[in-house]
Image (cartoon, rainbow, N blue to C red; front, side):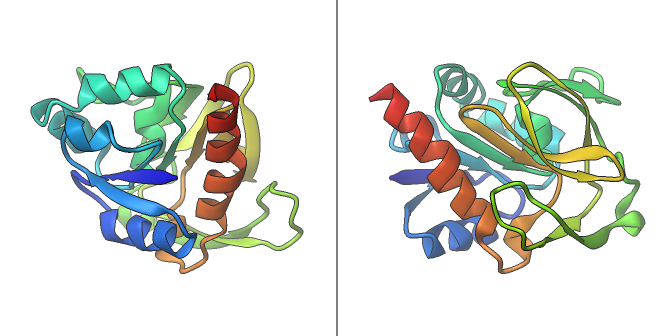
Amino acid sequence: MKVGVLALQGDVREHSEALTACGVEVVNVRRPSELAQVDALVMPGGESTTIAQLAQIFGLFLPIRERIAHGMPAYGSCAGMILLADEILDAKIGQETFGGLDITVRRNAFGRQVDSFESDIAFNDGSDALIRAVFIRAPWVEKVGTGVQVLAEVDSHPVAVRSKSILATSFHPELTGDNRIHRYFIEEVARAALQQVQ
């Protein structure tokens, strides 16, 4: 499996290292020709509006949106969650998303940079072990649509969700050295979605 990391802004290197440690081939995606090579795509944390604008400039915005609409597995952390959401609360004027995940997110829901925090949370992947979650100007999910499963919550707010082919987290697993979320994306989300397509 070839997994792309959207390499326009944000925690690109950290996601690439986590995916490589999980045994997949990683491609940094900055142009449509690189997107065409990958089976799945990871969208790092960063600034969601900046990533969307750069995707437009590099001719990636519509190709990514179309690939997701046609079932390409995708995972987004923090800003990546916002980019995958069908609806954003407190969005900047004209802010667009790739969409594909039937959720409503609230930007910067946990507060500003100074309100960033870490917490050990339960993640519904069949393991009883808690996972370390790093929240930096993080969104949370206000509303989940049909077919979206909540995998983790903080203070009754969903912070990890999945649909058939899409995974999104409010937090940054790429910053902890624990590859459990990336492994879950590869094994439980991406492989399952790709097998259904074949």
